[in-house]
Image 1 (cartoon, rainbow over the protein chains, first blue to last red):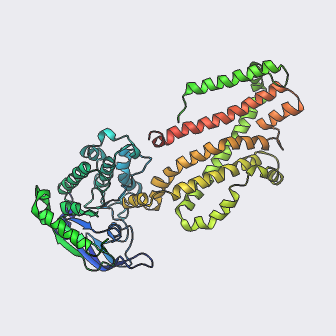
Image 2 (image 1 turned 45 degrees about the vertical axis):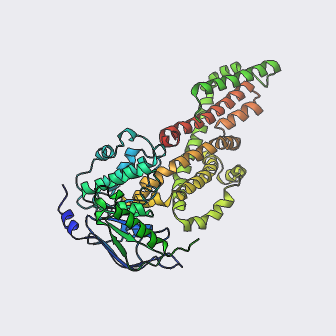
Length: 270
Length: 248
């Protein structure tokens, strides 16, 4: 279904961070010569307490902020601005309040046709324009298509944001706390859907979360960030996560417990 | 918040009825009945009132268009840039609350006869209101929204087209709603001087020089129609252009 460019990326590195340094003025840098690699098609959870730099990492990967030193490579390409094939879903979904679900879902495609296939704002070989209606249907939004974000539930807003992003046919999907403000059934439902879509479209998926259980359910690999500065990536393999009934297994509970211990060890006891 | 059309008609009838009763009770030439005024109104339309009406309407519409065309880009620019905003906001802060109507004599002194000084005065009122509201609207857009749209590939131009411009529409409409009444009031003042065209001139001429009270009232009705019409237009535009704010 995809052009062959996708095939090479599935074999090689999708993300390569080379000794990046990043910090906000007059504080300890969040990342200090930090390196990290992600293979194409992998699903990662980025886990850590608030203030550890999870969101910053996502912004760096998305090309929304540049590192102060070092390089971000995505699919072999040096990143210094948002890359057209990277889909980003930020914490509050970033929907336009004055636009309907359909209009919001079309936004990315409209921006692409606004610039034309210039290779900078939109991919050079702009494939046949994707069908927004397909995504609205796939995500169960058809009956809400003419509603405005304020009229939607949190889950529906998140689905709108997902359809907007997937309509642009990304190969890499970055999500910042995508399910944290949703109630439990909606959260589980959308977690499943996200993994399903990842499988269908062979996406590389990075999900930032502060919830240990969520990281363990979703991430085949977990990147644990700690109090800044982060220098060495702490990686936990969790390759069983995609097995059915993993949520009820002993391994799942053990991993959650050990992560809880690791995340709690630096915090002062009250 | 939307008021039904039927209720507006009833309100108009109540006002006319009160006027009628008051006029009958007073029984003096300085307060003719609405029926008498209505008859004169229709008669006067052909004898120049309509022309005065359109002159006044033109002045309001021209100054509104000018204010939007100039205030919106400046407001968006200031709203997007913290640096520019902190540079100019003290200036706006001191100029904004000055009642622009006191500039009428100065503007007339500088620009004399013709439409331009009148348009300029209304422009000044609308300009600051639109500028401030559009600026604040642009500045208050959540950074996550901007970043999300940037991540979809938007550079400066697309952000302007798909985020800042649509975000400014409700601010423009709010500014117009707040200022349309003041604009017409100030237009009236401005038309008392240095002109022989416009409803302000017409009302003053009939009331204070010709002592033609029914015609004076006809002029006041025309001015009210102008103000109400502009207000209703803003309402209508709001329904058309920002439906998302009403259906919440």
